[in-house]
Image 1 (cartoon, rainbow over the protein chains, first blue to last red):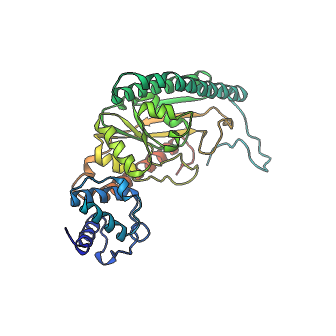
Image 2 (image 1 turned 180 degrees about the horizontal axis):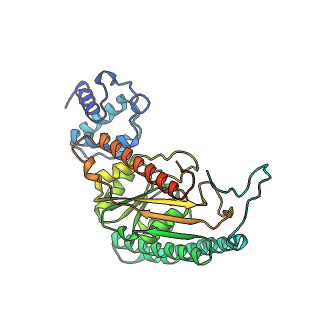
Image 3 (image 1 turned 135 degrees about the vertical axis):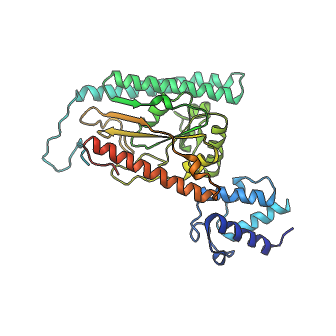
Length: 82
Length: 279
């Protein structure tokens, strides 16, 4: 199982590829919408990538309460632990 | 905008009420009254029966969509016969291909009635509040329309409808236009198009004089008989945006292209009609 640091590194890669977000701006406190302007339509593409990364059945429901990168890491950890 | 106002607050201007104004008011009341009653009636009879019919969900929804199409087509015909409106729907035969995503601007309440009424068994992305409205809940469920929220479920639902071969209607503005404000699109329609559409077909709608806008009650009828001009455009080149770039970038680029196309077409058509541009 990858460490939280590994997961964060992957999230940084994905955000850079999909949205050209500078990896230095991505910390657990970063707010997806307020800081990175990633909205609910972008989130669908992001969730596609997380589905691929975790190899688990992932639904939008799992991400309903995600606001920050930290929240996102928590969800991914929970999915990986399933 | 060069649109005659029904009421000009504090103004001495005289606004002409022409084209049998009072008859049109009466016709509007009769038209909408009949439509509401009929809708309620079949909502309480036919749609529950359809629900009980021993058919798979897909065939049941397809039947429901055909029924809604028939009702809306009849409603347009009724309003036309009553002299409440005139219309002109050009190149309508381009609508109704399997996997076709149909986009339209949304100046008026009637837009969805025209598009559903004239597109064979079309699906539609509809605001989710209609699932809780007792007058509409039966219809939107029976037809298997796609709810517009939450976003991820909307995108998946719309993609599934297109994959199943429906022609699907979406209003990228998300809600009826604000008169006078610049046209704005949400990216949801572009995201759906890139995921699942086989054809992406724009429809330009112009209403002159404008009527049945957002927050405008049905009884505030325009001074002249409104004319609805609907033009089905050529398919937009979806493939240009499916060139391997990441999905969020592709959907932004497609959305920008869609918006530019609409702004250009609506400005040209407005210019041709000799009135102010709506954007």
